[in-house]
Length: 296
Ligand code: PRT
Ligand code: ZN
Image (tube, rainbow, N blue to C red; front, side, top):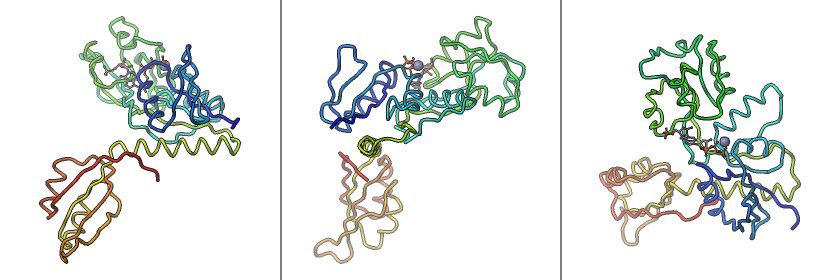
């Protein structure tokens, strides 16, 4: 097996641990090299390249890596910047349900804000000039974009800008700097991206296999297997109440004409409230089990 594929993952940062954990759950075993830039897969022809997150979109776009895990914010920034150059782009395969944050406009607490038009003629500090530029153009607003590589949140207090446009998750950083969030311009999560390049059949087969496994790992996280007994007359109502489930399996109970057992995979969280609603609808003997693996 000579044809190997590479997956680009953030070397050290907010996405690293979840990304490596995801690949581990896909069954990939790898040895960490001394420099930790390259981890050779031991049980599959799949290697991991550990890089800065900003390099991931172009590495995948150029086919240096066949797959990559990167924040939507980073991908979109690169794509907006590439819009003029017309470069081919990495393909988004799916959201990975971690790395959630939003790119928001924020203002000093005392600055009045009455919608995007309040940004007209003002200075906005950001590390996301391309996404911000597009947002402003869409709203027909002329503002000065002040490009900063980091420490964006202190730009207003240093007199460098009137507003900022930065990533927010808990909002603590904004609070600590006397800023308030005024507008969300992008909701972001970690994405699996794939190269647009044509691959050899061997490589393509491994890319497809990894995509299927990653899909299974992400979908299984929230999924539960639910088993219950119910009156036959309540099957329709109970099916409706089961969160995110496809058609449940309904089987007869030995010696009971009017009661059945129902089994279903629920793809959304099963809350206590859901179980209580099921009970009210006539369900009994309810069991909720974790799902270990799932392959569509
Ligand atoms: O070295 P490298 O370039 O690889 O890393 P980096 O420093 O550019 O990125 P890193 O590790 O900080 O973040 C990687 C990715 O995590 C981002 O591109 C986002 O997709 C995602 N992410 C999720 C976040 C946050 N949440 C986040 N809160 N990235 C940054 N932040 C920062 C934000 O910039 C601000 O400074 O956290 C601060 C705000 O957080 P709260 O919780 O105070 O609101
Ligand atoms: Zn970065």
